[in-house]
Length: 163
Image (cartoon, rainbow, N blue to C red; front, top):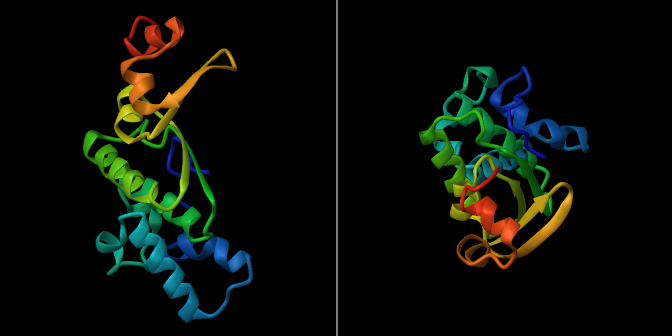
């Protein structure tokens, strides 16, 4: 799970990504190196941090911290990624970077994303669902939901009449 505010642990970049693997019993440095590099590459962060893996993760920008949190969960090789407004506090450049990362990750993972805004959902989603007061009002392909919703409540939301 990745939350709306980046939550890097107060340790190095390397240790943040290796944290879950160590808790799961992986202790061999070579294996941890492989896990960390693979996760950081998947989160589109490797090139930015490869020369400073031993520096504090708290020194990364907000967008880098959010991609670090994504890398930390990818290191555990989950089947599903849950993201709750992962771009809500980020600038447009960092948001674009996160969206690029998600577009690449959805090739190998099921991603459930609660987006910060409707435009983000339309850019990155293959399928979408609209919930209102805890009820699933409508679901379908992203194209169908955003261009031709069947339910008036969904249409009102995606066109900005409320929400």
